Image 1 (tube, rainbow, N blue to C red):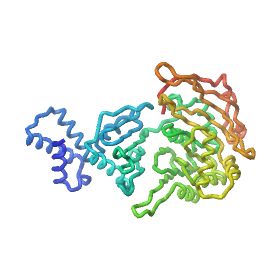
Image 2: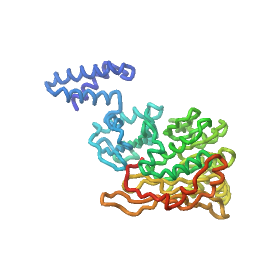
Image 3: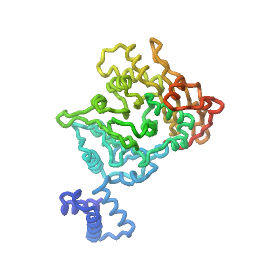
Image 4: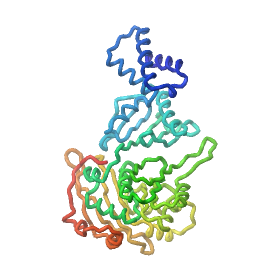
Length: 425
């Protein structure tokens, strides 16, 4: 610790702003300072240990400290830091303690400040919660004392540099080829799709895959709190919300962006997640010519997803009666894709449900595909199978839009596929 502190202090005395100095020059200077401090303290270390020390100091000065090694590990999908010495990571759906730590709370706060300041945001006692993102697109959430009692808490949701494809999800066992074919036809035929699931269930990954089926000749507007979607089409406009500044001004909400997007001549609107009053504007957009829109919502079942959508619509401050809202939902949403993270860490699309209208009191839902859990094997992995439940009512509409589907894929005997615990996306 004394060596690291002395090297850092000497470096800052020579460079008032290390961010302006060439990286190669700084790395060389850190190596020189390490040698000098070790000599002054009469400490002898191996070449390997010296190289490791230089790399660690370089990460602290120019990068994100202990985070650097975690961010280089492609198997880590989530990083959870509950204070300077309490670090966990998620690999293949399971949480493990990580053998690294920050020097102290100040060291962790320095790294947090470096992350949030890079996108023009700040975190302090007056603003103790912030959402941000890293250069690679990873989503970052920070909460610090006095709200976080154990110390600064940092959570990073990572995304693959190469977005998962539908083939990846099929190989992971997230869904089957037949289910994918049906959803693809719905997206290309401009049906409005709602992806529902709990935290960490893989909604964003699935939304990314569904978005990849939008034709290249359409104008797509994406709206998110923190930009995460990785669309490959050419004509994509990415919008990101903005929190209020230190004076409490300048906030731009998801709802503001949804309203503005309607003036941008979109063919498709993709909202990363509906959380509040923007649900009303999204429903109105879907009902007024912006078919083929996609969004996600936090809910545990397709029915709960529609109920939550109704609740969020009321958050817009509207005086619409529940019946009118449900009618809007029934006419706007065509398909609900329900995703879940199972107890063994795998992700599954556990239901694909079709909205079939409004019966005067509630929105009618019909399950097309279901995932049925059968039990747990000796290794703690979930055993289950996908089943086709019934033929969707919109097959003719899909065919009219040029999306022909073989009715046999909705036949349970031909469709049932047993799955054990493969790694999930």
